Length: 64
Image (cartoon, rainbow, N blue to C red; front, side, top):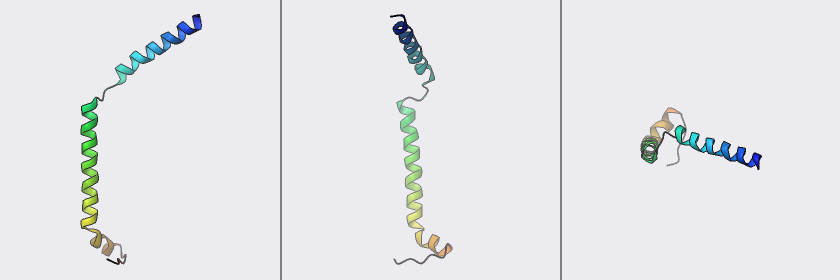
């Protein structure tokens, strides 16, 4: 019984500590996700738009 109480106290301390460590809320995560998606979409559109120029610079033949 004493061991169970000690384990329970340890889990309670870890649980309260996890709330102190948590600094990103849902809105921050959404903003970070939007910025990453914007960067991803921009790089993909840039690569598709300049695909032939990139292939010319790298001396890669394209069959398009």
